[in-house]
Image (cartoon, rainbow, N blue to C red; front, side, top):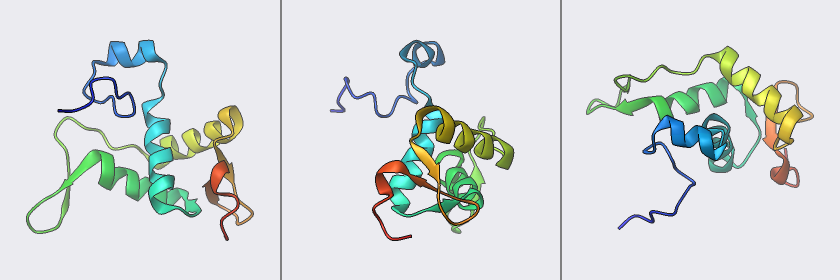
Length: 111
């Protein structure tokens, strides 16, 4: 049985409850991508990975198809979210290489 108290994945909860929790699901998804990669990522890498992980499913031929009812995030949305995450919470930082971002906790990793 799933842990009914787990709030790390709340996509099964109605949006009104998600809003009440004050959890930014989009930001959580981006942080999850950085944790999976465990390295600095470019905006383009975040865009493609976000699409593949959260907006698409892989068919039998190995081709990704957009999930019904899901609108993939745009590059502008990804860029704005990374910028706000770097300014507001400081969870994501721009790294020393132009156009790449890294989680604050991953700064000790070689870039």
